[in-house]
Image 1 (cartoon, rainbow, N blue to C red):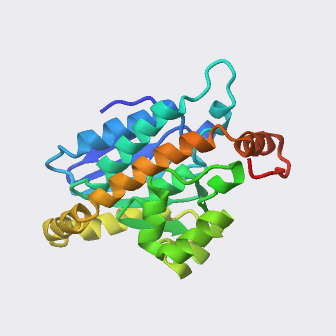
Image 2 (cartoon, rainbow, N blue to C red):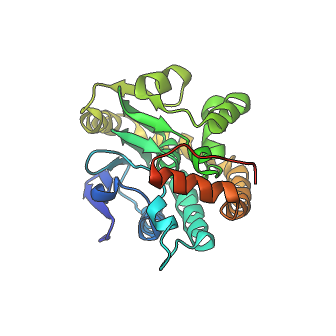
Image 3 (cartoon, rainbow, N blue to C red):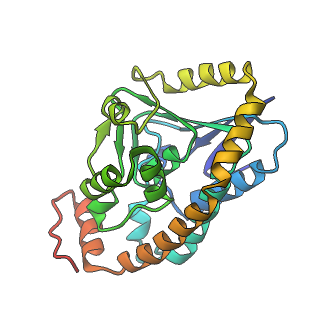
Length: 260
């Protein structure tokens, strides 16, 4: 599989998917989101791969949605089209017939954090920065961020985390159950590979069967969350607060929200 914004490598039963927009901090533009959807859908028909590692090239895992693309006057990001591809990649990723491992270094924010949370196992470096920070630009989580946060934290704490947009280190995220394993800085990819090899030496077919049983029960809820996120995000993208939020982000100042 050849992509413009992704690197995909397959080595027998192990595959590695690397987000490859390092100059843009692996932020997700329309091309990257479509290619994620295409890749995950193709992997649902993959018979050999049993472990998939997902990581980011360069200094971070993913900074989230491409805010500069949102502000592009000549070719602005089309939210409705984008949400179609986000829905595609989340559904396909959730039902992948393999164990997925997110190797998080640097930062994993917004949609990039939703992607990591959608993996079966999350390994984060001690000082990585993790944030469901859509609120900072007047948006709601997408990429099933609501679903994945609730799965890991429960509804009350998920709401608090989404509303606050707090940035957590890998160590802090581990304490509340947002990630599964914490490693020293610079070691996430190495640890993901070690874990992958351990899994491949285990009765992994049984593990994958368990994943299918548990995830299938949640498919209807996931689909409903994605539909509601699509409607709400389209509405939020048209608000005054969202425009103020992204302008403040680009201008590196504190936004002045007014609830509109």
